[in-house]
Image (tube, rainbow, N blue to C red):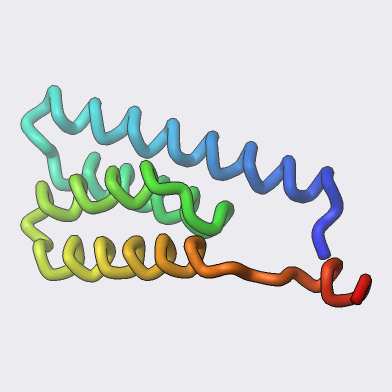
Length: 102
């Protein structure tokens, strides 16, 4: 179980990386989608995804970057992972704290 501080740190980490990734993506956009800049953006977005379980915008940005890198298969795979995470979030889940109360 995560403390409130560690949950906050994870959100801050994911937000920082997402902003960095999006900023790098926009920078790549102005320079004609330079592959190096797109790859840096991709790494930042991947770090953001690792910090926070399922932020939708991170997956969307990652797919946009992959398409620009002509990695359509990886973009489709990323979209599938995102769709799976959305389905998991829609299913009712019982966390450990609720189980311990019962």
